[in-house]
Image 1 (cartoon, rainbow, N blue to C red):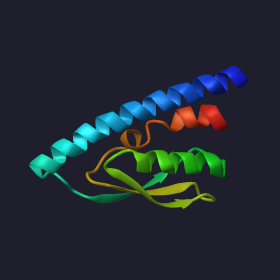
Image 2: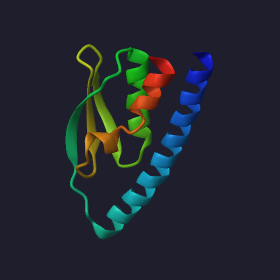
Image 3: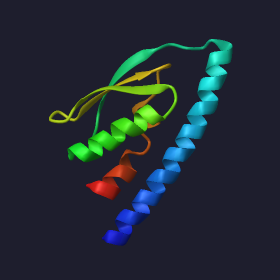
Image 4: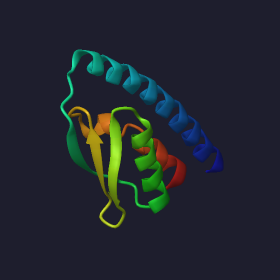
Length: 103
């Protein structure tokens, strides 16, 4: 079990770095061509522990182009501001890795 959590932690870190690099390039292109449509999205998370939800919210904020605005731990709702509309999976691709690492 401990080894599995460590492997999920490594995978989370690699996915987070990849998503940061991908979002950085996307934000740069959108800034240059002016294709920005800011939205606020409510996302229901599957994570139950407050520490897991906090790590998810911080991971979203670390990714360029998105910002965690509010976290309702009891209802597991996360409000996210994004510079353009995206699907839930595009905003939080690292949720399964956090679940495997901490839940």
